[in-house]
Length: 299
Image 1 (tube, rainbow, N blue to C red):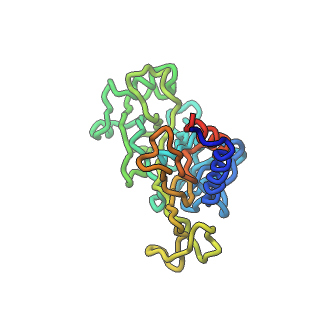
Image 2: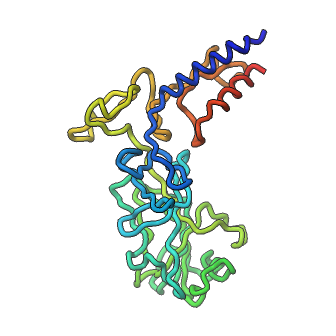
Image 3: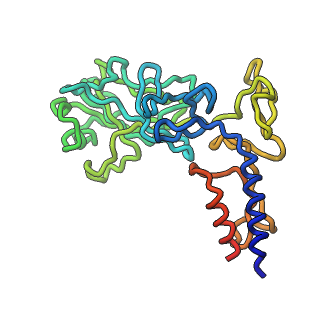
């Protein structure tokens, strides 16, 4: 026998109220039309200050030690953001961040360059021929430079090199200089088998370490689902630790409930109602969608 619909409605309503009460989101407002997901912070009152980015005229910017780069995308589920590499100076094969010697991430912050990048160094000196980079005549950088999508000013520079870099917590630099290469570009998740006109636009993927619980000076800094307790690595401050059977979800920045089911066994059964609250995967939380999903379990 199917449960009465009004009972299902009441159950769904109570579940949603419970789910919403676990939210301790500190998300920053949109930057123009672009969402700013946790843990990123565009102001002192939102996000985690260790993950500071800037919102300028509706555009998100990622600051390095010596420059700023436009953020093209952010994917919280895999802790990856993609920035737009520096462009070339007009009519040259020299990147605009050459004066800063390329990209230098702040090593004290929880970011590093990922292994998803294929870096192409352009306008290189002969010293690079003795490096472990692929600077051969068949290197992928030559395919790019000589294509219609490539940078025409770089075709006259005979030496370029390609390398897969990143993936280490110590990967913080893409360096350009007189004694090496004077320009670079990067492609994320590049499939070298594809023709160049099928490649995505240039981008540099940067990953971040999942954040710890928010820092607090007193209980007033925490919400009702957490308590301010001492933190071993903080002097004179603590962290907001989840209470009441909740656990810290570093992707959403909330105290969330563990998944359980009304019936014994896993939640995979088609006739079991999941009692999970406060968990969603990068999409806007929609009570309407949750209600529909709940009713479908009993169809």
